[in-house]
Image 1: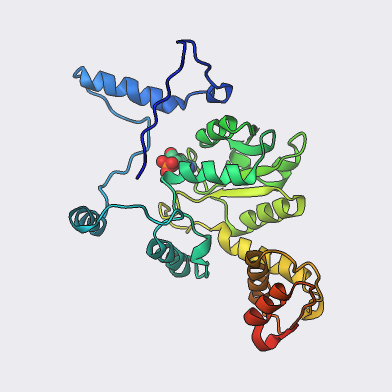
Image 2 (image 1 turned 180 degrees about the vertical axis):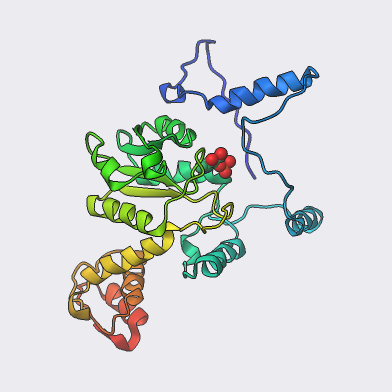
Length: 299
Ligand SMILES: Cc1ncc(COP(=O)(O)O)c(C=O)c1O
C-alpha cells in the first residue's frame, strides 16, 4: 500500500524548483473565479472549460457501483487492467479495422498522465517540440515542466488550422517532436487521412517524434477521425521491409535482449516474410529465433 511521506525542512526558506515555475493553465483560474462568483449567488454561464453535457454511460455507472460493492481494492498491473487494454485494442479493430497488440496500450489517469509519460520517454531536456497555435495550451506547460522547449507555430484558415509539412519547414532550427490534435481543441478542425499521412511521412523522414492526441475521437460529426495507428503500422511494415532484403536476413545484430528479438521478429512477421536466415554467436538468441520462426527459420 502507498505510504505517507512527510517532507520537513530545517528552515522556513526552502528552495522551490525552477521547473515548477511554469505558466498557469489560465482556464483553471477563470473557472475558480467563476465558481467563486457562483458561490456568492451570482448567475454564471460557464463557457471556460469544455465539460461533458451528459453523465457517464449507464453500463459504466453500474459496473463502477458493482466494483465498489464487491471488489477487493488493490493494485492493478502498472500498465493497466489487461482486460481493459484488450478491450481498447478491440475498439481499434471495430472502429478502424486495425489490429493493435494490447501490449502496446498503456492506461493512464487522463490523457495528461499519458503526455507526461510519453514526453518523458520521447524527449530529453532541451529537445524542441512543435505545437500548432491556436492549440490546446497545456502541452506547453507539461513540456516546459520537463525542460523541453515548446516551439509554437501559427496555423490559420488556409490550412484548416492544422499543421502541414510546408508550415513545419518554416520553423527555424531542428525540431525533435510534433503534436497533432485531430479533432483539435479549440478549433474543432480535423486532418484527413492524406494530410495525416503527409505529416507522418514528414516526421519519419526527419526522425521527428510525432505525438497524436486523439482524445476527441468519437466526438465528430459527418467525417470520422483518422487514427495515426494504421499509418504507424504501415510505416513499421515499410521500415521492417527495408530491413529484410529479399525476404532473408543474415543478421548479426540479433544479439539483443529477448524482448528486442521478439519485437523485430513480430515486425518481420507483419511483413509476411517467408523465411529468415539468422546467424548469431549467442545460442540463446538462436534458440529464441528458432522458437519464434519455427520452420521458417534457417538458424
Ligand atoms: C486536446 C486535449 N488534449 C488533452 C486534454 C486533457 O485531457 P485530460 O483531462 O484527460 O488530461 C484536453 C482537455 O481539455 C484537450 O482539449
